[in-house]
Image 1 (tube, one colour):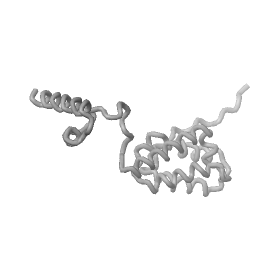
Image 2 (cartoon, rainbow, N blue to C red; image 1 turned 90 degrees about the horizontal axis):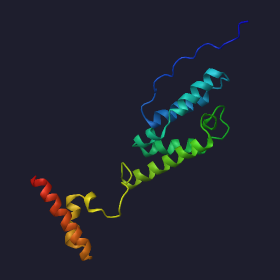
Image 3 (cartoon, one colour; image 1 turned 90 degrees about the vertical axis):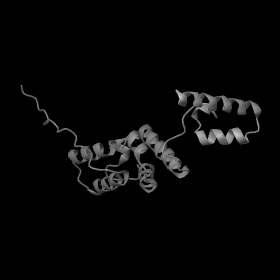
Image 4 (tube, rainbow, N blue to C red; image 1 turned 180 degrees about the vertical axis):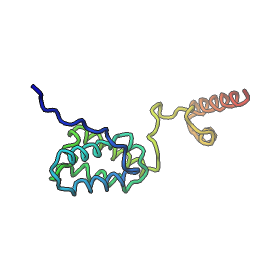
Length: 159
């Protein structure tokens, strides 16, 4: 007895968008199509799932991130096949947190989050900040640590 097997699906296409704004426009185009077919649903799901935390972290445009944030917030607004079907609630929450964190970083003028570590680690300070703190810091113990770091850097430079 021969059983019915659906035709093998094609491999996913490479990303058809180059920026977060292009992704938002493409998703709106897909949502506008009211074609209740499994191919359309699959294409919409694959395009939506192309949005990852890494791609959000690469985005440098706040307006694109704002549009993406609005889409994630309105995921259950009743679109034909929206982001609520492509992502679980936890995944949408993770992406939404990442978008908001990225927007906050861009508003602060940063491209990456601050590195983890001690509040004021002299090894992480640039030379000009080190020199300025040696001249102006009120705590003598901190100034001594900063001077030791400056001497260590001088020894490293000499070889």
